[in-house]
Image (tube, rainbow, N blue to C red):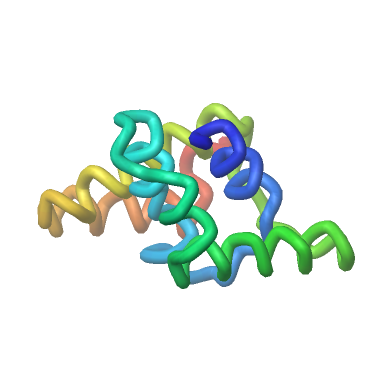
Length: 105
């Protein structure tokens, strides 16, 4: 389940909303065994992700990644952890790095 969700996340069309695009909480939950196929097929977020994947594949529109896919996954995990922990200072700094493409240089 987590591998499918990661594939979708890497390939879908992003909305340019950091709180949505960089939230990989569902993937983390799937890795931990807290996310079922029913969650995947029935949740509004999952349906949105599948729709965005379809748009991305059919139009070629995607997200301008900062660097490697691994780096983007690391950023997604860090963003999710700081977002869920409520650490606004570090989250703000991370948002700034993502927005300016600071890690791509």
